[in-house]
Length: 170
Image 1 (cartoon, rainbow, N blue to C red):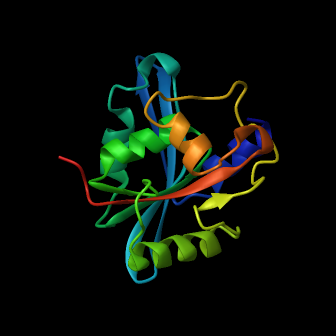
Image 2: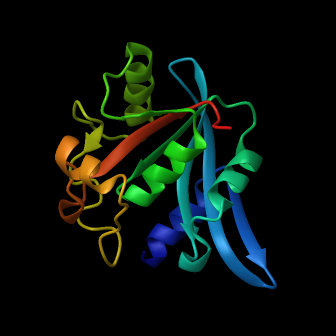
């Protein structure tokens, strides 16, 4: 990320969290609360977690603190690991390879409008980032093939995915 990316992820959201341990920042997360198609929603605007602390529940703990009654948790990502984190966090997640209920489709359309982007039928924003947002392509064994084969999401061309998570997984 360049300076402008970091600046926007920290200054434009309503809520920003830093998780630290012994004066060392382990994670940064930023969120906005909105109403999408009549449903209170929390948008994950940005999250960065130190690689050695990923997979240890930091995303879930920070998101629990950020939520204030929002039923949906939404994000735009090109990272399969971030998709998987939201998938584990929520009781239902879209897209998921199954037909999307119309109410979820309406929420996703409202999210795209809120984020000023156009999505295809899979919820993919073609070329959103202009290229790979990360230094190397992130992968996840349970998600990467879904991104590539079912959604035709191509990180190298900068595609991003709009995701809607509902409820809270136990």
